[in-house]
Length: 232
Image (cartoon, rainbow, N blue to C red; front, side, top):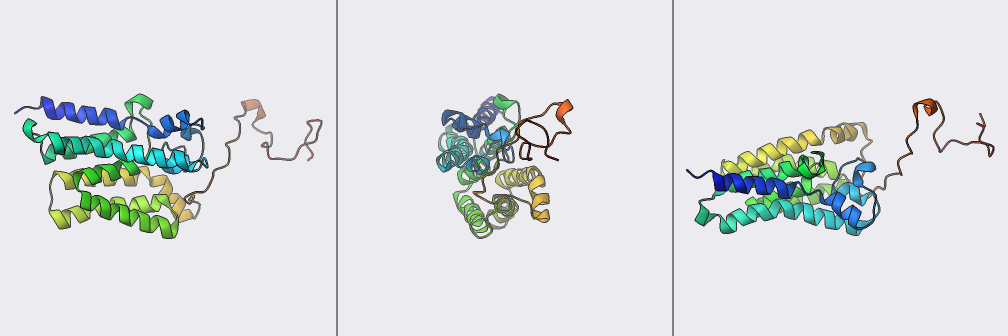
């Protein structure tokens, strides 16, 4: 059995997934690195917190495409090479893993929601549309991107299994769903605490770092006298 071609497809998909478009788009549009504000997550939702909707939409589209295109390529051109559903599922998972742990960005990536959506659209367009619809409904009414992603992540593998049976696609979706839940662990805690940021909420500019000797000094927002002495 030829393993070189499927392996090459998986590696190529991982490299495509490793393109952190949140960082690339932000740099190209003169914005701050999304890893330095808000949640620190290089994804479209955090880019939206910069206040630039165009950058967020472009990031969203490119992150989804890098999940969709490798899977679509296997489906469109893989048959003569012996590449079937198993390879397509592995390629989609590889692109998703590339987003989470990008080799080009120190293996520090995003949470993978948009990329997972692109993978789903490539593997099963009907499932992808259903998952997108569930995300939009939750996001529109509750305004929590993280909660919408969690609902979609839990929903997708079970719906695939119930409607189309268990197979490589279901297995790949289950792994992606589990990783999405894990990556949203902090968001789950914030949702339970009522401190999670809503969609479109702009984050404050992070304070400048202070040295160890200044650790007891009040933050920049504290009131100080004009001559530099504390008013306390």
